[in-house]
Amino acid sequence: MYLTEGDTMTESVQENQELPQTEAPAENPNDLTINDLNAMKVIIDIASSRGAFKPNEMTAVGQTYTKLTAFLDQVAKQAEGQKQNG
Image (tube, rainbow, N blue to C red):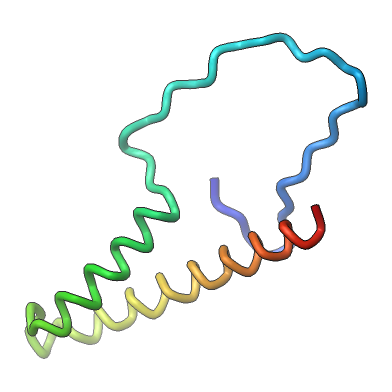
């Protein structure tokens, strides 16, 4: 699930309402998590510091790194906002 500006992840559950017990859905091993994205950011950082990218590739790598960093910063701010509000 991707959140965009203005989206919230709140759900309302009525008090004392019994929810049927169901098995948790099996996690898809192909799903990307925030931890996966953080790992990708670290990998890009390490690879670029070791000279793994050619000079003509650095623009694309840098743009991707910048977008990834901005996305992760936004997710962190949303998580902090939810932590403070809830």
